[in-house]
Image 1: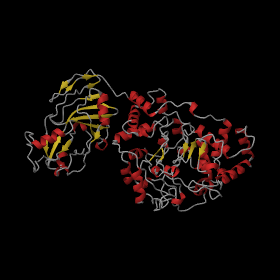
Image 2: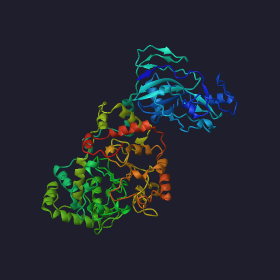
Image 3: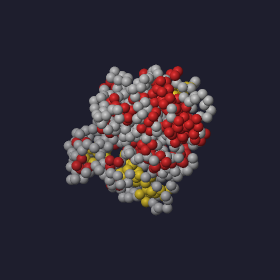
Image 4: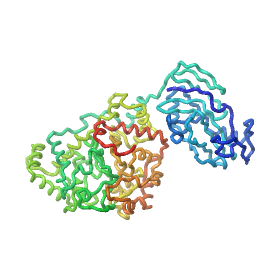
Length: 614
């Protein structure tokens, strides 16, 4: 990390500017004193009135400006550190002060100096790209046309950005702005700030992340946490996963929605129904022709921590077997929650069951066993399948049933899409060079200021809990609410209205390739979805429906966007939101996204199409 020294842009003394308009900020023509409404500051001597002195003294002593080299003012972020004195001879303290500081409102209004402000606001960057010669100006609240110019006293190069240090006019700092790296000849500027040699104390992200990992239960996952399966069972599961015979009309397989080339999910925000996939529904499509939720990815679902499935956990492990929509008709002998989950797309009318007798509607059915029994009879009439089942289950003396099919599909999914070789995994296993400095910085924001790990904890970045985070509702919904287009999520399963709009926390493994994001694919940019958490209720109001990706032939019609335009739904979702406002800068969001990319297993990246922007 290097501290650049330079002659300050402004004299490091008390500076008060009387400006008539923002044109003068831009330097277009000479400054002219503005009409005064309170006792004047003397532009020649810098003498201030008692009120103005009090206002000046109330300003933060130090402000820090972070900017990426080569970026313009729109990418800069100015912050007020919590401490009055920032010792930048300690790089760890300087960067930490910036990261924990409060972002400053930088007003873009060009007439700001022409009126009295109700609160101090800062002069716009005006497209500045040379911040060595930029002076933050804070507008006076007590006198129209008065601004206070901060002094640029140093710039640190740290964590891939330039951190500019500005101090309040007339503020006598006790800190030493050292030349990080040592060996440089020091000098004193006109205000007595010392520039001398100091050792490199770069932030120890490795130590910081080690502490976070202890707090949030991150550890090196091992083979013992994944159930083992015979090759014969995996082989049977592979055949079943890709076979359209599993659908009633013979046109849809598991792989129709879970595409390996699309991150084991689907490119669509809301995927098409089985009727569309099999070709029985053609032409213009509406809300009834898409499913109500985004297709969940399949990565690492064989890990023993995954004991609930679907966005609403309607399939989950219980004290005595598995709790499912089939109730007491749930088959015995299921290996895992993943196997129990595999049963229900087969029996759901909008997915693979079509119009068969007993087909589930809105995830409920009294007779899914009719469909399961018919499916097994159809498959076992095939001699090849009969041989595959016999090889996978040599102990099955009484024949084969639907639980054998479900266990085989789960075995294939668990083995095939185990993905724990990401750069992050390698880092947790001890390779401290597996993450780049920028990814470590993003991890620091993820586990620290961003509070992402309050939900995305554990070794696979999920607490397996349910949370309401203010994601918009659109599409057909799940048949609840006054119009039927709402989706209560876990609230429907638990029966508790306090759980409405809560959805299961997804694992973030390979999240960079599993968009669209959100329980209904509301966001098609990972970065935008991360930014959503700055202020979820505000993000709800500013959500752009045009980003939604729907199957060919489906338009953003009134029925598709019915819930989005429903003020009752909007109010209920915003009221249920649990996520607090987090003051994340654009730079911090970018860093978090870089960290999320480090959660992608290279084998997944190699076999997945790059579809979404970050």
